[in-house]
Image 1 (tube, chains in turn green, purple):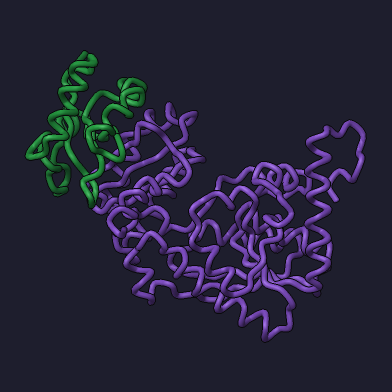
Image 2: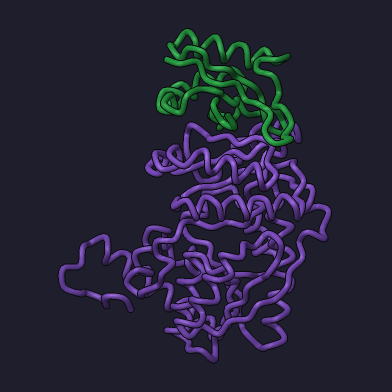
Length: 92
Length: 288
């Protein structure tokens, strides 16, 4: 499995919250995903109440993330979402 | 009546639906003349069509409240259905955004919106001599969290679809028999329903949601919501449409960034009705 690109700055758009930065729930979510075999996924937090776990992972992991959603929510998130990121070769 | 009572081959459950349709017709006849809150959605379009069939054009008026939270695409449907099916139609301006209680987006936001709508619509009914004001709530709505229904009660608005016991599925089936194009339209609540409670409703956010949902429609998706979380768009797409969504993810993302969303997120659980009500237990704890 390839390591997904981290969310990046696009066209003047602000950099998202750093993955796991300052939020224990995000770090716990990354550990959980790693333990369940989703290797290299990065988790950051979004939403006006910081209620969303935004997961940077390959789109092919969607089905597995859906299965893991209840466990991820149990860490303190209301919603679990795949972060749509710019392709790694964009602009090259 | 669609199919007619006792139509050949009619299933037992359809007989029940027919009985409920008859009950609806009886309720409308008892109303004598009706003014209907008409959004162009599945329920109110069906109700308006049946009212015209039962009471006639002279005793029916469908009224649409136009505001910033009412999607333009819905307005087109409302106009088109009224034209095609001979439903007398009136558009009036409503301005729930001017109410700070609404704009603050509390969990009972719909109460303030519907208060604005029904205050204006009941005034129209009074001025024009319509005996009853109706909404399109159905039997399935009874179990939902719907503070807007309280406003309806306060203004004496009746819900004949609910009174007749007609469910959404039954209304879709009957709409299909009547030839209404809305029979297969997805549910279409107002744009403010895409903002989580507590995030202020602003014109800019409503327009961003409307433009973003137009992007998803252009990409061939039918059943979805763009939820505006302030710093991100969270897309809820019906699971059967998820492969198409993933196929078009880059185009969708680019378009939504252009619209002004800093981040674009795809909910892994897909579209589910009333997903933002997941916050209600937390909000109720905070209030309590």
